[in-house]
Image (cartoon, rainbow, N blue to C red; front, side, top):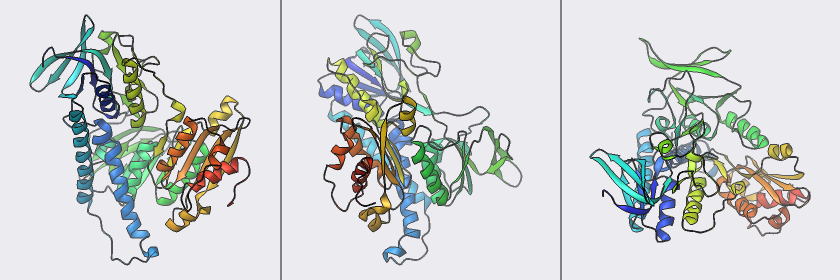
Length: 471
């Protein structure tokens, strides 16, 4: 394919990249996607969002069978664990979806090229892209290039990642056995989700967080309530812990790990999961040589149309910073392509939801109460507990509540935060409300089916005005 020319070439076949490519094909652009992995879908599908949710679902069903079945009249013997079968199911889910993405690329006549891409020179209106694979190099040309390479797990000084005993989320998705003692460094969504999985499967999980709270960036009231629930479930959450190092301890008796924490005794465990955030995959792409600007952390700098200073080079997703979420990358991919095709470019970042897939789930959109206070924005708050909802009683999903923040003068919804079962699905209504500039009154005057968990959203909107019915 040497010299092959495209209207758009996307580097990275993750959610942002493949969605951008499909949108471009829909608009009639000749499009290619380059990714170094043979399976499409990026980190999200291969070793991120999808496999973690598969394990969360399997482990939660195991907990339900062991602790909840009897209350529903079910009678069963001892419920054991076949970890290999659970992992096999997870892998099957991943394979099905990655094949599905490849089929979508083919269906839309998108060239899917395996290899590692780097930006080359400029030939008139065309940018050269050199793709290196096992069988050599090929040079492509494109009028426009979107960098959508995503991110990788970050680490900390003093921690010796060995890809086995001490690893990241990638390794924690494929442990061959349940570790007796697991230390999770970081109480963000990745640490809590995977900590929950292994806690449910029988591991003694200790979560170490440098800050004085879990879920940095989430609404503090929600995070505090969630921490209490997770602690009751068995997670040993320790706040204000500065981790100085972690290393494998190989003695004659056993192989384990030691985690050093400032001011505390060393913690011995069988495995360590480092979940302290993610860093952009921006190296080795020829960006600096092409004139693409990056900050000190490696995030690509773009304007409101996702354009870099290099002509015809754009960037989206994790590699440009902001919330590192698959759906945020997808929105940016579509908006960026619309702009390349001469259309309108706009994303309302206040309407990008965030979800933690623990049980109960944590979901939010818009501003937190702390952000409103800091900005001096006048607001009213309405909250409503799930335990007062009929459907929650029927399903046993009693934990948590819905919290709505509305402008004190205009009643416009500024933020919605949910701690509860299926919060990740319920938040979609709040996203739509914020996107369309709805008020709390608009929300409570919208009919919500009974009995549903969504009634808690209506009641919270009523509570903003002191009019909750069932509390």
